[in-house]
Length: 331
Image 1 (spheres, rainbow, N blue to C red):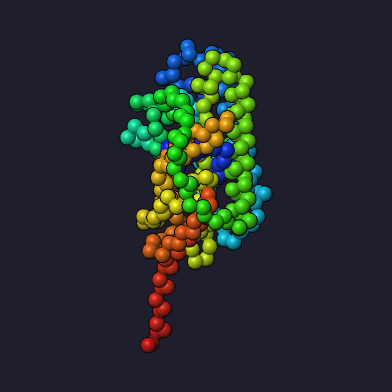
Image 2: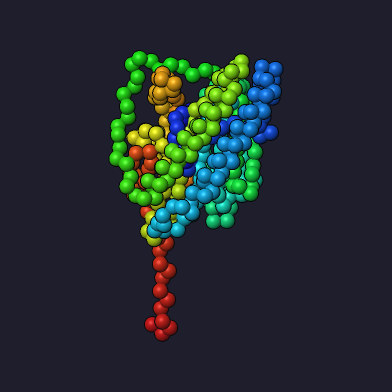
């Protein structure tokens, strides 16, 4: 489960949860990129690094559920996302277990909003999320790789090359510190996301160190990321949704219900992080997630509990009226 300028809220730090990076063939540089500016050796290293990160992302999520403690209720749906930014592109990785990823579609709206959707299938409701990405190349189109056997989708979009900027001396005050969840499931989930993010950061940094002696090495291996994940459970009287967004300010996240869709909306944020001994600006973009609920719900009684790095949302069901009793003949 670092950077973020999307509708799904993202971030640039060593963390990520259930619910990032660059593709080539899937992972090869976009056509809009100037091929002569990047040595062939460096492009091959980038391709290998991105494939390694994709495999790690898949293994980490596919094996995570078996190691988690049991919970009340039955699991209905879950999804995990990791988004990373290089100087010339954004890369999003999605883990969508039990869903036919061949039906997943990606598009760009208003020149800056990446929309990812999948239709309802079987017991799974429709899937929809969007992230606002700054600096996309005009008319950029997402390159999408689908791996049905792994439940994995990798999306890459070209952007205008940029460099990280030092943080201003007067940084914004830290967000309100919320209490951490003590539920074993939540603790394990967030630990898993942070560990996975840290390991992917290490892969990225090791590759950067190997190529930094090349001209432009730091330009091509520029990183930042944002992670998120959600889990939907069906309990007797309600649906319970856990949304994990490590290092995101949960106070800024809005929760609403429209018909049978739970909407998670995180506004863009700016903060600072340490990098090589210096404070660097980190932009976490606007992120939005739509979670399809299986049945009718009472939108006026939704309860949202905000914890550090996560939301616990309870949505009461609306019971269908009991059928009228048949009168006995002769009455």
